[in-house]
Amino acid sequence: MQNLKNKVVLITGASSGFGEDAALLFAKEGCKVVLAARRVDRLQALAEKIQNGGGEAIAIPVDITNPADAVDMVKSALDIYGQIDILFNNAGIGRVDWFENHSLDRDIAMLVQVNLTALMQVTRTVLPHMLKRREGHIINMSSVAGLIASPLITSYAASKHGARAFTDALRREVTPLGIKVSGIYPGPAATEFGQHIGKNKTFGSVRKTFNTRMTSAYVARRVLDVAKRPRRSLIIPWWFRVVTGFDTLFPFAVDWILFAFSKKNHKLD
Ligand code: NDP
Image (cartoon, rainbow, N blue to C red; front, side, top):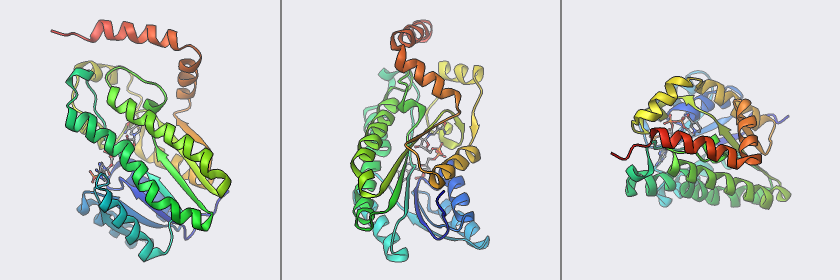
């Protein structure tokens, strides 16, 4: 088990949800936490909360879709702490609707940029420093949508499948050089995420029927577990492992179920 005391952890998307809760837990373990996101007021409040509790944290306002911002963020973290031990690539946005309603700018280009391109760009900026030390852990936030492709979340599933492929390819590339790479695949959880994904009647009723959302604090605790005991992937809750296994073994059966779902709910008029 890894001792996290004094480790430097860079968290993207630290202004709410999993990132915020994970930051509090990493700080409790004695980590120096670098908080990154766009909402600077939220980051500063979190940094103060951590500092008032005796921990160490800095807030760096950043839009990760801007490569220059991402480079500055990594530079600031390195200038202040000298190293980055754990990179938690967590920032993400979503969109729920039938694909013909997805806008090109926000729901396709921006979504892929935040969830995939920026994640790769931030990693590309941090990785050389980890490689130099032959040490480090990259934890990438994907989703069960990165394992099972479902209707209503086409763009999101594409971006999160991309994040999974990148995570697996990178792990196979850098593990022999001392860098650990893990993928996190949560099912639905109660965070602000739901407020930004748009409204869709069908999705709303699915959510009501299967109201099994995890808490953000639970997901954050499991992220901390992964930091302490690095592994290739974490799928939560556990029963999604059964669902994803079923999709891998019997994709035609899952197709059939989801065809029926779309036929019933996807009204064109
Ligand atoms: P939140 O909406 O609470 O958090 C998203 C975070 O991403 C915020 O801190 C936001 O900060 C940050 N972010 C978004 N865009 C940018 C940007 N351009 N630059 C920098 N930061 C950005 O949602 P969650 O905590 O739920 O989501 C965290 C991750 O978990 C995401 O990757 C999401 O896809 C994934 N996930 C979520 C699930 C859920 O059901 N909640 C399930 C599975 C995975 P700010 O707006 O201040 O920039």
